[in-house]
Image (tube, rainbow, N blue to C red):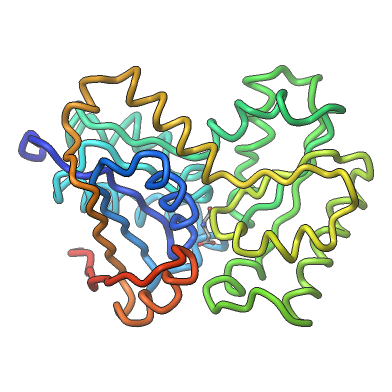
Length: 281
Ligand code: DGL
């Protein structure tokens, strides 16, 4: 058990830079709170790792953010949300501190689908791990009924390395963007809505849009998660009361901080300063 927390910042966790696409929108909507962003860049990508490994890494990160005082942690990573969220909510929280909360990014995204898709043909771009977990098709069936949506998924293992290495345009990037789009529409040519089910992918949005058929909706999660967090805090005043106010953002990375800063600035659109963080095994 941890010491009961007093007040703390909202924690956001991702395997690397992807969660910054969530942080950016959350801070825009809720600038008053303090935030700690933890990117496990040294062990990214998570998308190709086993269930056990993703769970182990994610549980470590949640515990670390709790120890820094966060009463609320957002897994700003679909792979971690798909593979670790439920176990953390059902088992780890009871052991660590049942008064704190851990939220994911998949459910808020799925909730919005009926408002966006007209014909119910939905495509998911995600990591291998998220696709293999079937979290999106299962959550969509659970929330909206099995017969109302036809869901097709494509794993895009090249996109996270491209983003982590700032390869966002050019011939190589275009090739791998077209490749996965073609695979998706081969599965279902009628798709009218695509979820970018990995928080790294919004950085590739301009390129993806260039090759998408006209009229297809592309859903990025930042704005959705920000609004869902706002509503969550309105409903859970007990958690909201435990958040520190000050508008301060602390960036932590398991990689070298100067490397993180250079690429994170592209995500956030302004310069920032980060600190190196090591997990204690
Ligand atoms: N950004 C993550 C996600 O949303 C994971 C990317 C990775 O590390 O493979 O799935």
